[in-house]
Structures are given as structure tokens and as C-alpha cells.
Length: 121
Image: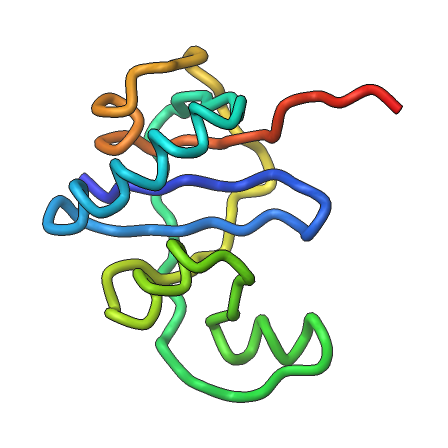
């Protein structure tokens, strides 16, 4: 089964996808996010269309969509992109949540959505 996580934050929704060969690498990132207060929701499995890998300098969201990849200012995620372990995908418009999870092993094997912890201000 295809694994994925959609990070829902102020930078826009970014969906990362990988296969079982990258589980251990993603596990470290997921555990770090859980420790920082991120909340992960396991989603009902869905088909995620894959985008072709292509390197271009993008200045607009349309160029990002056309390119099919982005650079994220997160050293852990950037390393996985650079190594070809993960790639971006077009997220579904609706997320069918099954449950909330704090089990990083379950999260790494599932399709998930993650949100940063709420902050007052």
C-alpha cells in the first residue's frame, strides 16, 4: 500500500508519498513531529496520483503544479526528497478521517494528515 502524509499548515497543504522501503526514514520524521505536538489522523486509503519528478525553479503555484516537486525548508524532509525516497502528490480535496493516532509505526504505514499544535496569540 502507498503511504502518505499531508501536512496541513500555513505554507499550504503538502502531501508526501513513499513506499515501505522508506518507512524507517519517515518514522524518524513522524516521531519528531509527534514530539513537537503535531496531531496525525489516519485516513481512509485512497488513490493518490503521482506527479512526475522534474527539477525547475518555480515562481508561482502553477509552476509548482507543473513541475511536480517543491523544495521545503525542512532539512529532514529535504534530505528524503534529495535521496528520492519521497515525492509530492496532488492531495484529495476531501480527507476521509478514520481516527487520530499517536502510534508512529501505524502512521508510517498509513495514509495520514498532520496538523501543527494549536497556539494562542
